[in-house]
Length: 112
Length: 113
Image 1 (cartoon, rainbow over the protein chains, first blue to last red):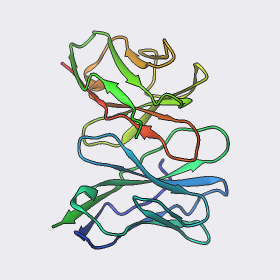
Image 2: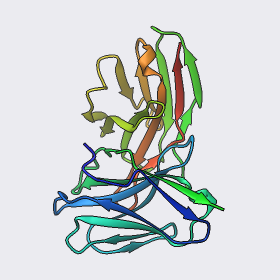
Image 3: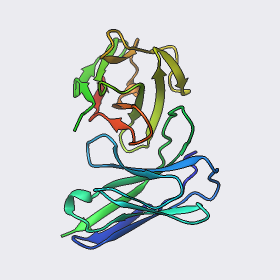
């Protein structure tokens, strides 16, 4: 049980922003929110993660709701290379680094 | 950027044969994992490994599977007697700390015939 809910698919146009939602209404206070993506025929790739505050890196931004029951991955300007399956994953915090439980994810299609 | 390297990229084996899938995690990483993905299905956790022992394993990881870190750099997954249903992509992953996420390799496609 991945314990997160994501839309099955989304579409975007190249160079437009993309907002990928994730619902994790049963999240506990110490769970991190991780996002990974999987390009065709490749392994999952880390995108970003956060706990409470919004986070930015060179790939994306992560906006976390104040109640932490949902989050949104933001790709500021989609490129064709961003077409992938995006996974939102809860991960227990603490000093151990446990398994990632993948769901079906959101298939992102980017149109030229 | 450092990478997790997996070999071979594709392996074909006959049912009942033993296979060893190899991974070289990032050198300063401490936690190691194997996942698999059957074609068209979700990525599934198999096993995690820390401090030279298994820290967690899934129901999939039965007695036919074993993992080893024989020389401090390689991390291997052995399937003793392969079945048709073992055909899948197998991904190795590693992590050092939670500052950044897990790094996955590009996978080994195992085909059992």
